Image 1: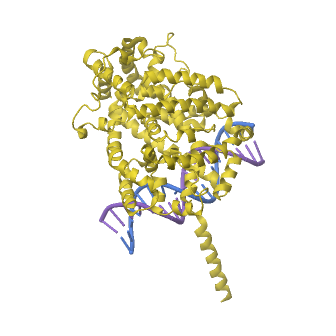
Image 2: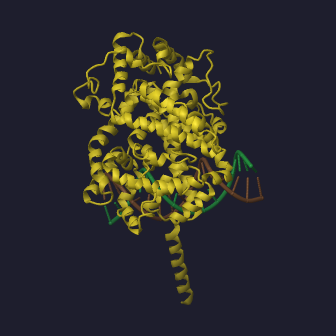
Length: 526
DNA sequence: TTGTGTTTTATTGCCTCC
DNA sequence: GGAGGCAATAAAACACAA
């Protein structure tokens, strides 16, 4: 009897232990973690401790969470890369452009090469393979960072929008830089980063090699036609052409349904490089996304955002949205946090925050698992400036001051983190204009180039490596400003670019359109 | 309501770097 | 050898369709 009761209590104990076994993190914790993760992909021990304290978790949990989070990122991007790889084979467009660096994981299984870059750079490598990521991230950034950049990006942290940063840095390569590199006088490919041993002399192999030779010929032909106009500091391509009436290129067809690309048209897609190169992919990928989210869900979200966590309406909509998202979720999920929204929603509000954050378990899932919501909120978040401002302040205080402020010391201590090639790579590459290439706004480009240069000069080596990220920061800020500008005022330049394409298609036999054709036809060949 | 699939969390072992 | 990270695995929590 005694034995049995003892046993029972032990069982209860065990069951209690079992109940404890796996505890879901609260919405607020997740938000904070996500935000922090966005800023510090590899937090130092102190950061972990602090975060653990703030979130009332154990350091172990924090470490584990970050570890899993990274794995998740990796996995998602891998999946995405695989998916895109398939698309590339069918569309035959992008891959070789990105192949300058990214082919390994896709073409051959030279995993070892990653090691030379950095084990942690695998993700960024994935970006190379992941052509959608570049534009996607760009678009995401444009859509979701405008208000938040000043906050989230204001951190001179290790990763400061780690993925985005690299994504953009890399984004330039597949679409613009590589062709330019083709034009390098001596024919050698300049290193993309100082570390760049891996990159140096890299050459596509197999499918990409053959394909690259064909397509690069076409691309190079176009480049040659464009001549210096295509160069970084060259004049605007578009200035050659007469301006068309406003809206002339807003949509080629009256029927948006038949022109998903146009409907879905994110600002960046005005970029000829990308639009030409990615049309297939983007149209297939974005149309569903943008047609669904930019229109209907966007409105929904606007409505939702103000009342973050209540209303049956939202609940229903969330469910609906969740279903819509489901197929896309794997990719977007990991950047939900990127929005830079309040990292510690309840931590610094009050306990109700937790309640509100966790108000609905559904919402919890919604906002974490299907991060799209949050992101899209940001894309439409001009309507919630106050809210964003409040969050910004808090985020700034916590993420920036709470951690980054102490970073130099800590980073110093955790040399491991600092010494990561990812930093050097990023630092070395970011200053080169990155996403502005995607913008194809030459005017903006020039301006931003100046800003970047200035930023470089101003912030370089102020404080060692820890401060290098400031360089990124400033450059990013400048870029973001431009992005904002670009985003808000869509597009005289973009239209010019578009016109350029169309005009090219009409007037020049070997032009972007031909390039496209070449790509398309080449895609048929493989 | 239940079965199934997905996501998240926790654990463990291995590897690399210092 | 220790620390940190990655990958594999198991299990809990959750979502969703039948």
